[in-house]
Length: 148
Image (cartoon, rainbow, N blue to C red):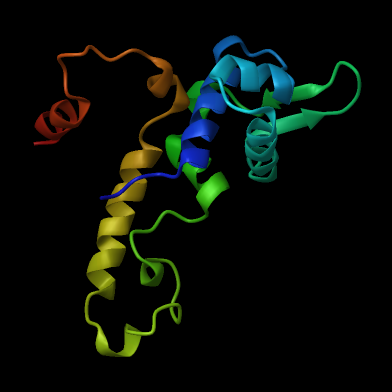
């Protein structure tokens, strides 16, 4: 089963919360809003800042603010800031990481699948993530039907 890490899930929650009002928030305030521990929120924010997705301001009135609007930030960017390049397998990203590489003919297919997954994630913005989806609808089915 393919899943993002809990830290990445929290990062998307943090980013949606920061883009919701466009205000600057402290790590503590964000932790309270998304119901995680403050050290976890701080860790996520440092990684997001390192990825260029949030700006950090020091001082008594400091905090974090998104670097762009929700519509300009993709889910793929948030995932990459926390987990690194989006890839289904190690060999999808870089040669020489897999001990089976010399004997395996699947690398090009894994790269193709990884590119498709990354593109799908690039096509979803934080603005879209924060918009409610009806309980009865299946966005994956809708996307598939619209693409066909």
